[in-house]
Image: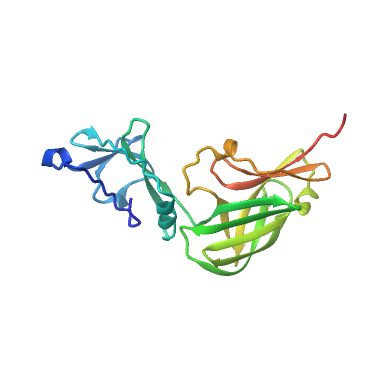
Length: 232
């Protein structure tokens, strides 16, 4: 997949010199279309075939540098080529909005520090805020941050979040905020699936409140606060 959403496929000798049209078929709806124009593809998974047979490939379709280069272009949908478990070629199409791709998370000394870069949006420069928004209850808590082009750095203290803890567990979603605009924080430009169970960040404590960053099921960065039972 090129940055211009063009699908390029190479064969040593395509079908013995007989080049058939590549057809894409939507897995759920059965809709079919040619691969010459991908702008018409709806969200979902599309499988590629040629001459009625699946397109077989040994290319995993993954390049970290390629994903970063692709994400540097402002766009509202993402198309990724991938190799299935059967060795065939598929395309994943999904709607996207600008967000901050998280590169590093540091949780220590009473602060959660985040570094990352803007994906699918324009570069920004200026002072910003790292905002933690509770899903229920407390008012948002924020800390200083900045944008330098695509690069983002920010931190938020955990004590103000812990001081509002009245329920057993409270979840906070994290955003980069500048000029009233909030960009979600997430890590999606990699090949790690199910980050919620695979990636663990260290926990910190404020009194009886345990504070730990974690990834949600959509690979967004959030913070879980829970009151620990200290009774014997």
